[in-house]
Length: 399
Image 1: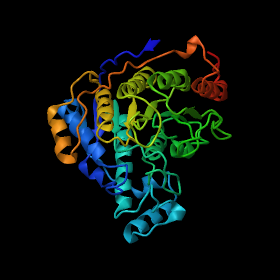
Image 2 (image 1 turned 180 degrees about the vertical axis):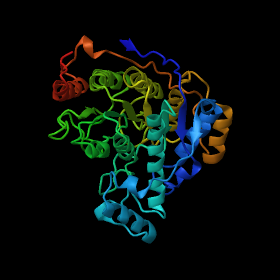
Image 3 (image 1 turned 45 degrees about the horizontal axis):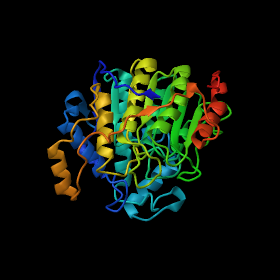
Image 4 (image 1 turned 90 degrees about the horizontal axis):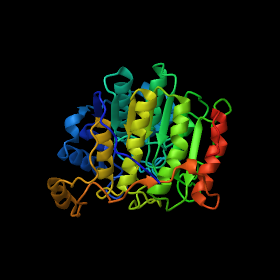
């Protein structure tokens, strides 16, 4: 078994793009995507001293020109219109149970786009080595419609902004429990962008896509990579799949900048999906991405949030670990959760918060190089992905 090692600190300025008005992206009190999850994350990060090592950068508003790089004008107009009228527009995916209409929906969504582009700008310009927008990661929005809690696709807009500045290659790794379909589709036929998504199989979970044979358009075969994981996949299986696919492809592709989406709805306590990771396994995944950014991209790393609906027990701890890695000063998993934060959760939500920053798991896994077992669903899925994609990059799919 391979055991993930603790990440080392790194040198360079790091930022988080955030202001409280980003919480205006709010579908209402009964919607799973509660903006309080980000407030709780920032409070926890502050109490643990993480923000002492991160410069907090104000989030700008995304401009019409920036939105038009990844969305149709007619769709943007539909979002503005729906926000003003309150009426659903099902043709554009607005007013559904997943994506209800709310006042100022355009401004709130465009603000997240602006924040994500600013995170990309921070890294591209060299002002930051790493930059994060944990309110971002809205990876399901399509060019002409909303989907899966996502109105505008801030990730695609950020990547497109990097390409428009002249970046020749961007790698995008999505570890949300749901397939990163909107980002994949935005760059489906663009060989400059490698999209890799590890997610619960679309046989059982929204959006029903993201299988091994989906490898990119005719001019970019191999640019889309999908690992469809069985329900119940826990730390050891998830990390086995990640390390069997992601590092080899990133090293071969040689991107200039690594962009990642860290939806933490892969946790066993998440109410909307069926993977079984711990906070420790998620932290190990974030650490591996951080290390790849240093190994391949001279440390240039842009990190986004994403899904995550266990808003007290999981999201704040997982994303505080993420922000600590972005800061270059990772937290020890065994740290106690600060008493002041726990009291705030009790007072605000009437909930008992976790005691520690760990779930008490050891994120170990069996390396793919030791061979695979075709009798297991997980190994069959990983092998299918390697077989479909690795030869397109000149890599041997066999262990």
